[in-house]
Image 1 (tube, rainbow, N blue to C red):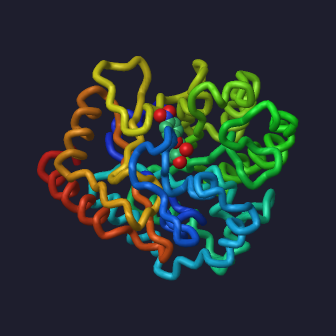
Image 2: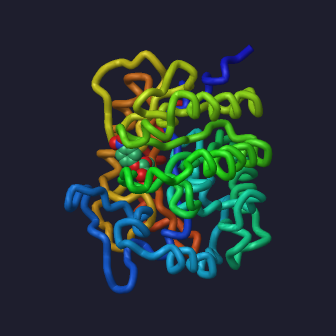
Image 3: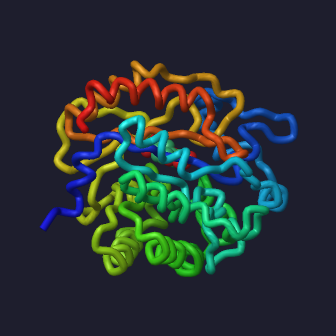
Length: 328
Ligand code: JFZ
């Protein structure tokens, strides 16, 4: 029998997609634009963080559901670009920190069914395209941060906010939505996200194991990444997740990947012109491949559902190189 991690160990190259309500804003809200630099005032300024960074009130941010209308979204086109670039798997933000679900969730009304796109099954269309082109597929799910649920984690969890009953969020939204994603779409991997010490008190070893066991119970193939509990991933995860844009110099004792951006931001930011060259990105890919690691390269699609032209250009340039130098 083939090991369930086998495909991942040989995949080398995958597409990551950050897409959601924040994509509508593209880094600008009410005339204020987020910095396009890695760090300003000691904080990261990714476009998908706009609700927190520009302190947009929940009711204003959540009203964006009315505007999520990507009329030019075409799953086949996205996955064909990935395939032609030599990518072997695809991961999309099913739910990012803002709490919005990109599928019609029975657990929450803050989802695609509340948008003009109701009736469309975006994740299902992407899954079908992945099957058509032979790509493995998975979902990013923010199991810890959730800025919509009254009990979800929020950045800089301070003592004053500890009265929040995280367990309620965990049982009401986090676990049930993960179950939904597995039962509905049968993913090949789940990409969970925690960082540094902040997650420690909420994503305890007990909760980490509860989530791992849920996934294992529902799926015999689904891989789990190390950021499910970056501070203490334990032994049951399937692969390690490097820090963003981090390229290890040594061999590691588990399969691993680097999540990486083409420019600075993950989600669409209309003023972020810090594009890396295709040559630079190919060197990262080769460097990781030479050490047994994968390169999960991110794209932030635009609100109309199309991929940014600078991203398409780079995918095609890398694909041309892969045609002559990559493995079939
Ligand atoms: C997280 C998210 O907050 C971000 O929006 C994006 O989805 C990214 C892929 O993951 O950000 C992180 C998480 C961990 C680190 C850095 C950024 N880290 O450990 O270096």
